[in-house]
Each structure stands twice: as C-alpha cells, then as structure tokens.
Length: 266
Image (cartoon, rainbow, N blue to C red; front, side, top):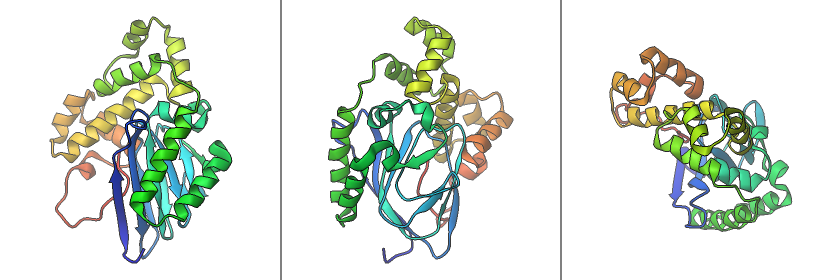
C-alpha cells in the first residue's frame, strides 16, 4: 500500500451467497497516524479477514475477527497498514457460517479461528498469497458459499420475520410478528437471541437507525427523518444516534466535498 488513506473495491456476492451476505469488499487502510472511529451498529454481522497489521476493536487487538450484531456502536482504532476482505453477513448467514447461537457474539468480536477453526487460517493464508483484490474477492465468495451451505440450516420463520422488520424499517411491532408466526412473545425473543443475537425490539431499533442514517445521507431534513422513521421526536432521534452510531444526525448529513472519508458505514 503505497498511498495513504482508505481504499475499497466492492463486489456483488454470487447468487449462492446473496441470501447470506449483503456486502463483500476488499479494503486497505494506511494513515500517517493512528485513527480512532465509532463504527455504527449494523443489521448484520461483520467478518473481517485481515491480512495486514492488527487493529483494535471492542478493546481487543485483532487482525481477522468475527462479530455479531450489536446494540451499541463499537470503537475501533487503526494503528498500522491494514488490508483484507470485509464481509457483512445477514444474521442467518452468520448463524450458518459460525454454527453457534448468535447471542454468544452480540456486541463483541472474537478471533476468526475461534469460531471457524483451521478453515479460517487456510483462507487467510490464501488471501495473503493473492495480491489481486478481484481474485481475493472471488476466492472469499467461493469458499464462504461452500462453508455456509455446509452449515446447519435455518428454518423459514425467523428469516421471514427479519424480512418483515426490514420492509417496515424497524417499525413493525413485536406482538404483530409473534401473532403472525403463531408464537408467544417469549418464544419469539428466544429464537431471535439464537439466530439474530438481539431481541426483536432491539433488532428493530438497529434497523430503524440504519434507515434514518441512509435518509440523512441522501439529504433529507433531520425533522422529516425523525417523523418518517417513527422516532418520538428529534431528541429521541439524537439519543438513538449517540447510542447506536456514536454520532449525531447533524454529523451524518452530507458535507462539502473534501472531508475525510469513512471506511465502514451502516
């Protein structure tokens, strides 16, 4: 990495991977001094296949790591040249890939070998030996597809409920979801903790925050976004942005050209 700053190359996941992965990109970061960021909560699980210098996340020094969904923003710190592949998994892609209840990864990260074993080490070695970003992305896509499809299947009920939450922008009530599935509230919460990692009400908060952030980035007024996304008022919107994004709505809205780019965004 000869140039300073962040660089990203996006790839569209293959058809087999698309139900389980919402973002796939190769990246590099190199700064003249350490950079600390607030990484917003996402309606997905982040997998970092790093082959450069370690970074700090949730107070841990890690190079390649797996994380679950979070109910708060995470502080990360880049202290040296980093590169690799970033994958954002759906909750159910992560559940199949990791093969463990997602509540064990809520608001935390663990070294990727902890959840994926020797397979992860082999993948990282192959990525490090592959200089082309396009080939790194193709390799990751192919091997992740094989690994996920070999994992424990997920029943249709929770993906259906998750899709309804996404369609509603997080505004669909938990009682309505439970009634549609014919489940009790307690059973719905237990299944969400297993397959998503968050309670359905918290998952809805993260989805609503993500929609509000997208609207703000597209230039919508803050008050209009608060009303459109179902926040009680602008103060409620402000509190949620601080808790889930480590930022304020005013800092999300578009800025004049020339400001420093962020590498990871919800």
